[in-house]
Amino acid sequence: MLRVLILHGPNLNLLGSREQSIYGTVTLDAIDASLSKLGDELGVALDIRQSNHEGELVSWIQEARSGYDGIIINPAAYTHTSVAIRDALAAVELPTIEVHLSNIHRREEFRRCSYVSGVALGQICGFGPTGYLLALRGLCEHLSSRTSKASTSRSQSMRQAGTRRNR
Ligand code: CA2
Image (cartoon, rainbow, N blue to C red; front, side, top):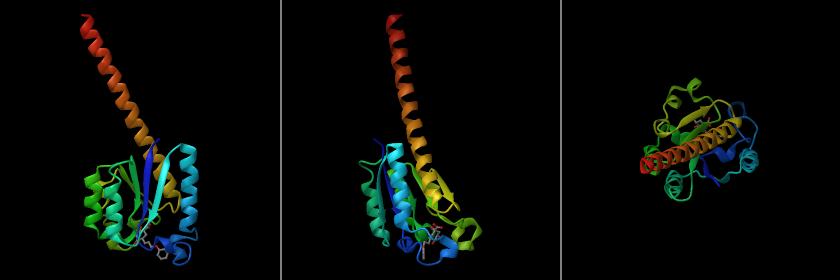
């Protein structure tokens, strides 16, 4: 079974209570519940966490090296500041999807820069809570196509080895 780590960065625990004109009315608990439901449908085990602390996020990313197949992360404000989170993601070498509720490219200039994008498989932004579900579907497609490509190339090598032996 695939295992995916989902990380929410600082202040996302406040979703639904403030800044509703930007981030909407859906709470983080509701987002997590819809992710868990989709995880069940896709047969993927999810580990979902939120932290307001950069170092804690870095430690969780490092720990994901063993036992997880991919990461979905909304680094929130750390998107625009954290070399530490970028370095941790680069170090674990797990396929990572960056998610933002808002379209960070239509907002203030400083939000257009993401330290994470350069080490991510892709970025999804501007779709609100649906962005997390798109990310989970995209990551699962990516992981399963990688597995099936690997098994196709393994069987091709075995066939080729068999042909060589029979010559
Ligand atoms: O659009 C996103 O998902 C962001 O990652 C959200 C971050 C922001 O710093 C990024 O530029 C874009 C902010 C998350 C804070 O969320 C709040 C929710 C409710 C009330 C206050 C903050």
